[in-house]
Each structure stands twice: as C-alpha cells, then as structure tokens.
Length: 312
Ligand code: FO1
Image: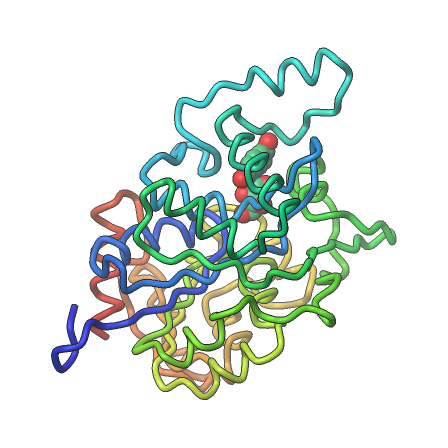
C-alpha cells in the first residue's frame, strides 16, 4: 500500500478476537506499517502472573499460533500446569495453557525487572515474529469492573469467565483510568496515521477503555479518516457479551446504536451487508456509512475486509 510514494500508515484500535481477526487481514496487506493499540482493561493478576488477554489474543493471532477455534490462547497448547494447580487446590476457572502461561510469566518477570508493559509487549511480539507493532493502550493499570444490578462489583474476568457474563449489568467502571495516560506512542501514532481503523471489538469493554484515556478521543476527533467496523450484525455480536453490556447500559443493540455511541470522532461507519437497513439509521448519527461484508469467517474474508477498509 503506498500513497504518493510513501507507505500508508494505519493504526487500529482493537480488543479481543474480533479485533485480532481484522488485524490479521490488515497485517497481510500492510506489513510493518500497521500499529495496533490494544485494550488492557481485561488484564488481571492470576496465579502470580500478569495476564493480558487482549494483548496476547492479538499477538498470537498475528503470529499465526492462536487457537482459532476458542479464539484465545495458543493452538494445541497443553494444560499441565492448570491441572496440577487444580490438584493442589488452586481455583483454576481461568484456564491458561502452558505456553500461554509462559508468556504471562515472562511478562511478569520483565515487569519486575522494571520494563514497562509496552516494552515487554514489544519484546514478546518480536520474539513471536510479529511485524505489526502491538502497543497496550496504557502502561498504567486500568481495570474494567462490572457493577451488577444487585450491587456487586466484579473484576472483568470474574464477570466474563467465572460468571459467564450471566449477571445484570448496571454500570461499567474503568478503575484507575482517571490517573492513567496513554502508553508512549499511542497519541502520536493516531496523529501520524493516514487512516485509523476501529476494529469490530466490544464497544463497551474493548473500545471504550481506550477512548477513556486522556488525549485519545481528541486525537480521533481531530483525525480526518477514522473508520469503525460495526461489532453488531442484525442485532447481535458475533462473539462475546456486547449485547448484554449494551443493554445493561441502555444502549440499543444495533449497528446504528453503536454508531451513535461513536459519533463525535468516527467519520465512517461500516455496516454489514446483511444489515443494510441499519445503514441509513446510522447515517442519522452524523457519519458516512458504508456497507461491506464484515463477517470474517476465515483469513481470506479478513483480508478482503481489510482491503476494502483501506481503499475507502
Ligand atoms: N475465556 C473463557 O471463557 N474461559 C477461560 O478459561 C479463558 C482463559 C483465557 C486465558 C488467556 C487469555 O488470553 C484469554 C482467556 N479467556 C478465557 C478469554 C478472555 O477472558 C476474554 O477473551 C478477554 O478477556 C476478552 O476479550
């Protein structure tokens, strides 16, 4: 991809699996000219290690080693450590594969040696042969918490994995975000990008935490070419709890509902071909809407969607 002789620079905002699939398509077309800014609100400390699910999901998919059936973790991974921890009486509801655990242990080790999360993340993606630059949204601790209707406050993994997202959500809190700043290079990358792409990640717990960091929303609002891909098709997410979270927050579970959430900084909103009725409804949110095939059923589909997004 080149624009007047210079390689096109693209920045993508991403969360979990939906973001990872599109990043794979973008990486194929852009090589080293893609920067992924990834949500860290889902992070936690479990088994004595720092777990960064979205950073690892994105890195493993880009490295071609992801367990693409489950969406997270490493393909063909063993779970010997989990099984042994379970036998010793540890709670192992969050199941980490052995090689996945090694990534978390290495990250924990590097952090204890004084590395920043973005430094450790860059080392890991290079070690796994990933060309795309993977940057955590912040090097500071931001933790997404789910407040339920009966007043419980759940850490994200507690909510998503242990409780299977089967609770009534009253509020979503990004604990620590008021004292956090974007990781080094995040705002610069957005400002220097020819195009910013917001992946079809969960708008409430993957995209919103990134936007909550100081300077990010302003940089996006000032950028002339910000394209977001709908995470909702025909009233439902392709994966994950986005519908329950949107409903809990009183936001319509539709492509146009998400477009309205993104108004103010998003310039073009991509609706799925099977959901075209949502296109004119999204136009009402004050942005250009485009209809594409957003279902990334395989790598070719991801590459086709990426190609379309880059040529908008
Ligand atoms: N999701 C589950 O539903 N069950 C698990 O046991 C689980 C383990 C896990 C380990 C590493 C990792 O990077 C992700 C993992 N996930 C698991 C998915 C994770 O909870 C969510 O995908 C993200 O937090 C949201 O994108």
